[in-house]
Image (cartoon, rainbow, N blue to C red):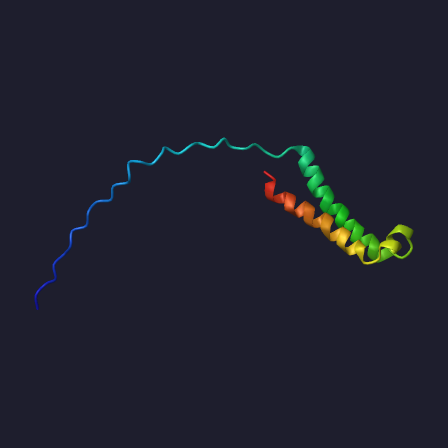
Length: 88
């Protein structure tokens, strides 16, 4: 049986019209105030939910809010969690 012919591959040459890459300045660590607010929001949201479960019916303004307390607690915690995406 005859051998198949081997094709020659051309060497890859990158396009010459490309721009040179721009160096991005490395960002430093997050500010201390940012970390305090981030962890504070998560902690306050958790405490809001715990207080709502334990003594929500005994605190007048929390009793008036009803099920909105769950939304408030979760929004506070989610806001803190969303801040972690920009934490360096």
